Image (cartoon, rainbow, N blue to C red):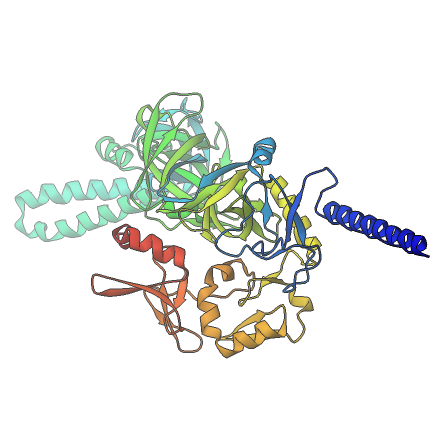
Length: 548
């Protein structure tokens, strides 16, 4: 009996030992990765500050916890909570995928806008010779299209029956005037008729001039006193023949265009500009004009005339006025136009840093410790490889400028794993991503803006003091595609009557009446800020931001 008890005791001890080994083994296995690396703990990928010694789901958002392995480097999250879709990439992997970072800075850009212009004749220096009577061309001088002519050069002559009677009356009036002038020298009474005869001669002369006879030929007719059937067509100014529509023996009719002559010593250059390019072409400003495959440059001046809109090309046609030395610029010729565009100081980033899906534009911001936050931005002008950022980024932040498409792919996978769409919004209380379509009644409206929440507790906290969370999360609201902030230069009235002030660092609007609003005093004046980063940047160098 005693032996049986001893055997039973030994069996019990062995069984306990085996159970302990089994539990220890499985406990170690649960702390070991399949690759053999030891698991330190599990954390919430959206809130890395939350840690657990066992796998499971996060208590705040219900997201699956992820393991943190031994030797994986620092795992602490940045000081601020990273939003949904943020990605953590270790330094060795960053080098492997070619990820590069750059600091966001506010700079003034001077860029050369290059476009094409078309040369046109100056309308104020273009002369059209129209037929004033019906007739026939009797003689054509050797001037063709493109020929250079001088003022009063005879281009052609024509015959018209309408001139004959008027010329005869003009010659008779001249003869009568001669007789009256001779009699006036001997008879004082005849002098009273002199003015009437002079008026009669001038009337016939004006009639001939209006019918197309030049002053040069009228003077010649007055000297010769001979009836002529050939009326001269002369050049009204120095220039080049642009159009010639006559030939010898041609029958023409009143109102037809015979010649068009332009003075090309000064020409117009018509430039098509699109979008906001017009603001760089101010009246009176000089621009450079260069002929293709030609080294010479000509300076033109922007005209004061309002640009014309072309409905076909949807472009504004800006007129440049230029001197034309050597007549190198000819009508309908294309030239290269270079405009020095002075852009004001603004935030610009490389164009490749912006991931544009068509519906939204995203830039990945370095949050430290290998975390990259997807930040929705609003862009402005683009010049070359740079693009203006209107909203979404601040000076001093570091962004991904190369390899961001790989980061974007992983960020989308994170959002999909969290059950969030790409157009998610942020819970202003906890910073969690929320699908507006699935929020249901977990939403609240404050000052005309709708906010969504991940759980009823966050909604209750927000409604107890909305101004606190709106002020603290103004940077996050930049990312919200439904954000409708009002612009105000130096202050204004909000939708609920609160005063708005401009954050001098990032340009955001701040509700000064909100509780807990961030502010700083400088030179007896108070300035307001949307987040601690802006306040700290201002306090380090206030004169930098005041000078803007």
